[in-house]
Length: 219
Image 1: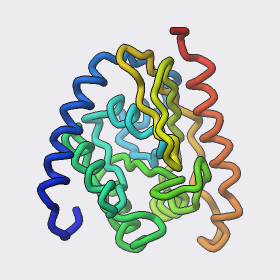
Image 2: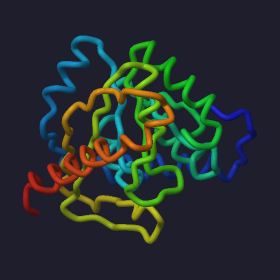
Image 3: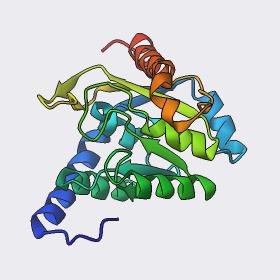
Image 4: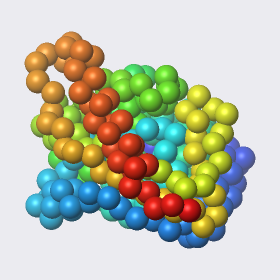
């Protein structure tokens, strides 16, 4: 957690946010696609590096609550709100990003993996560009030797905010489909070469999102 004091507005906004998420998300009908490989990795106590697009974060946080996942969340004010909601849903949090304050974030993520927790990273966060896979998650994967697993989400009915990430909020009683992509092995070579390897992981993310949309039940 950040050492900076949290003002009362953020604390109250977080409490209200948690209540609203619970009220809304409990109406969602969630289904999972291709969950077997991840379940097997967890059975073997082999943690993974999870990657999720920033705009799909809300449905993913709900669908994977209390699953021994540690999420990387920025130290911006909006990050504090998301962190408190995530903690209320049973997540561990590491504050920072793989760009700003990267050293501390990478160390924190590495420790979580060593302790047996999956780690979740938004590779296009915290500020975009939209659906652009930055190399930070790959550095976590390379240093830890843990594979990258892309998660995709699709909602049958949703609100989409006019933010850079097109943040998606499934509507009440929406069908939410969560799809797990193929495991992608840690990148090889020098850390300086990671940016050149991002297309492979970008393609895996795009495939997971397409799988979620393509297998979603109508309505």
